[in-house]
Length: 168
Figure 1: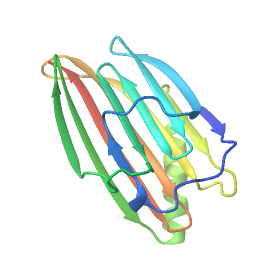
Figure 2 (figure 1 turned 180 degrees about the vertical axis):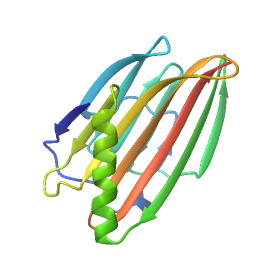
Figure 3 (figure 1 turned 90 degrees about the vertical axis):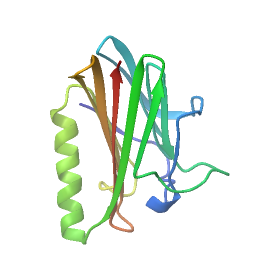
Figure 4 (figure 1 turned 30 degrees about the horizontal axis):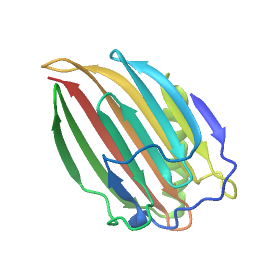
């Protein structure tokens, strides 16, 4: 795992402020890691306001964005030339004991993964953004999946996303 202490204030104040986009260009990153999976260079990027993953034709951004419609879709599918992309997001609110245990589980999962990037924001060891990616074989072709977690210790919320990009 690539774990970094992020030298920036924690900008997200609530999970409800997150937005989703597949059309944004690069935003300033606090940390970035490039991994090679399923023949693609995959850029895992941690922002001051969450994450970006660039893989093949996909430019996924989940972040607090000025002027964007707030809220994450529960699911989204996009068919791209030669690819299909699926996205899903869930938000959970946990009591403090459960929240701490879940953050520890996320950090452990990121530590156990060969292709991950995890950032801890100053002020709380439980203010975390983590991205874990892996190659997969699908019925139509090779692809990859990535999961992300965005934790909000001040509200006890954890946003989890799951994305799959599969060659067709």
